[in-house]
Length: 461
Image (cartoon, rainbow, N blue to C red; front, side):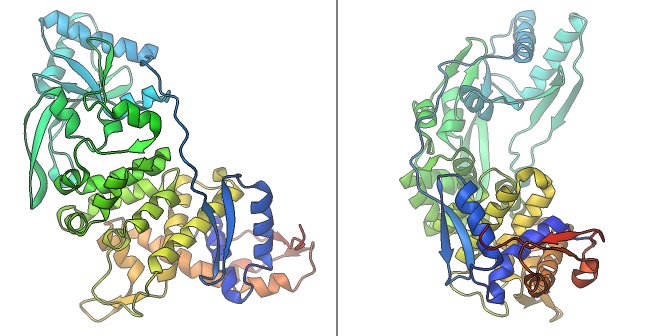
């Protein structure tokens, strides 16, 4: 398998201290760059005890966000909503049409959003979509596509969803609902609900807002969605422990949204998320696929370190990245923090080099590889007593990710180790000299152009 050179080189930079260079040598150049070009909100920490250099975000209270008083529709949105309202008039329907959730949140923040979820108060989504299509035909138009997504509780789809494509935008239609959960399952019993009941069943107050297209008004039925959006708070509509025990996946969603918007997690929410009952429910009630999907969204997001810090602080790391019963060597105390430190360093290196240098997939795999770097030499035995890397178990069993993801991360770990053999050779040359490395590909088993030239930068740069 071909290993992306940029990703492997990023991991190699994390391993430099293991040669005894500490935070000097080549690392000094990284230090210098970070000091002169990194954001003022970051401070450089030299962590000798853990053997790596880390940049940690300083705790800065969130600024009050600019939240609009009303929603400004694009021309496309106006046209779509006009057709939906036209359907009501054509058939004499008394249905209230509300856009729910993330679209409302993002529009109030002045962000574009192309994910419109419609909530209907008195009919199923499939029934309404049929009427929209009939109305469009009556005015000489047609929907570009119609489909029905069946309910699939294992994938967190508890309700049948009708989907229609209007003017190149897919729109989902569901009915307002109320949910009741049992202690042993995250799959709720559902019934038609009021808009208020639907708002309170949602994961976070900032995601509980509606935009009523009949009245052209934002509806904040929990009475705190807009205020929490303005103050940058992550809060659940109902008591957090109750909310999380109903659906423990909401813990990871709260963390992801908190990191994404750089909002503050409510203190009661954090206590609930870290309590044993919720952690047990997260481990028992949520499929590993869903956990893996949330972690993928976190790693691929704009603040992976912040989100993973929350996961560590709330003692959820080993719930998420569950391990086999026995491993060799045993996982040391504090390993989760070491994983976080490597992720932090890799994230800073990627940003120092420039996000555009990497594809999204290269960045995702490099960050996974950095996060799991402390486990690269840890193994367990399968049913046939064969030694298997623990990293492989985490990808295939804990997160239920693709096999090729595990293979690539393991290859990155092996390649980064081999890159270490280049460091003494590079350091033996005079500062400021270019070195032609024709055989670099042979040294590290990574395809590299024969024209590669490496600049040894003076330490004082």
